[in-house]
Image 1 (tube, rainbow, N blue to C red):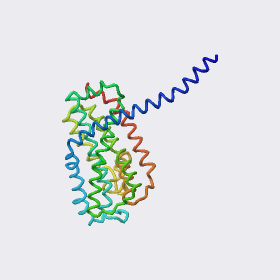
Image 2 (tube, rainbow, N blue to C red):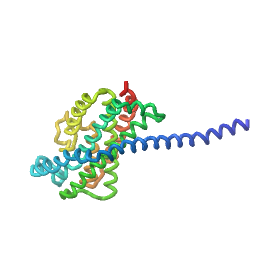
Image 3 (cartoon, one colour):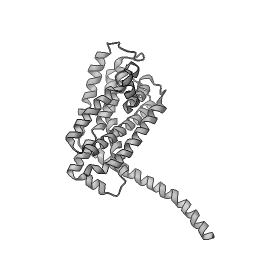
Image 4 (cartoon, one colour):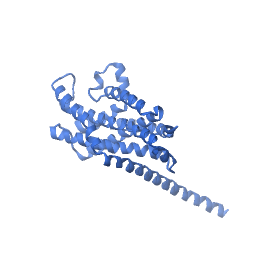
Length: 276
């Protein structure tokens, strides 16, 4: 009887240690994939600057031109200031949504098959690549921040707000990167992926509050915007950077977290199917 009690106590003590060790190993696996993906960025740093051209044009040309038009209430700020969080979110989405293209390239090169043969969880592969997309997105956002500072766009530069904005940028990048890996697992060819990627990015962008408030949208578009994760990323960034008040941060972060969890679960399930 004493021996059974001892065995039960020992198992109860060992189980948490095993779970903790498993979590640590998973985190190490994820960080390893992140580091591996970021090596590509180190060898191709010009990618960051070429992808920053489009948001720069939006801010400098579109933003300044439409600052002269008083079509709707921007909350007492210029339209260029109002749209800056939307352009930040657009840059994050465009950076992450085509991340799945590298998955197809890795399959064609035979690299993906080696990844899948490694003794690491599939979720570590998906999350590692998605977090690497988040780091890339942060680099893009830094460029836009520098442009905003140079052009005198009045934003809130409080360190806590900037840190919160960085966290939401990573969340948004994780969602769009996992979405792109889901698309890559379904279409399986680079040509189809590029077509679908271009097909969904602009509707997601314009069916959000990136350029205009949801209140001026027709009813059907409001419904689309309310289920668009990009809207919640823009809403959080606009509160953090423009108004300095995170009045609805719980809803914004909560919906982005749920979207990331669902996309990661589906991406983890479909990821091995890229090679079939």
